[in-house]
Length: 122
Image (cartoon, rainbow, N blue to C red):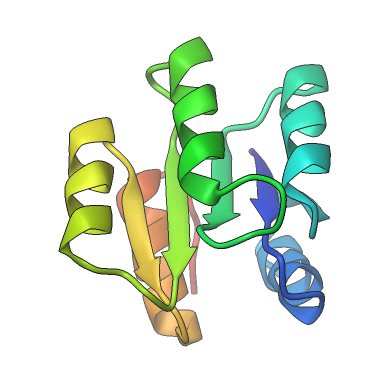
């Protein structure tokens, strides 16, 4: 399994990399949405964890671009500002939401929802 993490806050992507890799999940991370877009065009990922609010490109725009090329893509949008509009967008696109701040239990629950049965979480 290969996960791409695109989160604007500098410390968070690397923390997520450490957590996911400790569970045996190959993880690539960036804090730049445009760099993340380039990565997804050059690599195959099983899951995307994307911050909603980023400079240069919004996470929702990036998620739409991913879904246009792969309707079955598994995406988790992370936001401290989840509202009904974002929830409706996510539901319409088949995207999972992760409200920030989140703890490990909530992160793992959302990962399991996005990729049922594929994570050996302890």
